[in-house]
Length: 171
Image (cartoon, rainbow, N blue to C red; front, top):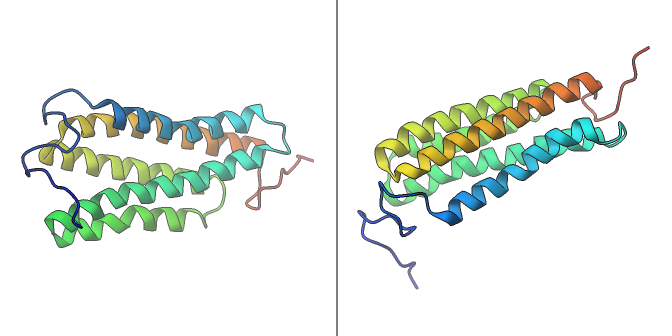
């Protein structure tokens, strides 16, 4: 059985290309920010012994979401073709893969850079290839996710969480 398809000119979400953002992707995108914001808050609100959990939650979740963002382009490439799009689709996953091996806080800064790069590509591509609301949504989601990753990385650095997740006490 084949997946149902819509004509190429019709957005699959029921909105028009120039119309308002559909509620479901917006709500899911906002829900996807919860772990980023929770991890950032956790690095300063949790007891010292649990703060490394927040750092590593941000690292793992950031890697997963960055990979997901590349997957969007893989899906489009499956439908439309294009070698460049297939190549780009794996770049966010590779950025995330190498980032997790970087020392703290560089790992989260590298993920944040990956989000900025992926966001810029998405905004450029989806402004041109529609739906337009997706580029707007990606901009807002990218700003919040990137800020949360940077905050989490800097907070973990202040807490002096070592690369193995242990609190290092001064002196």
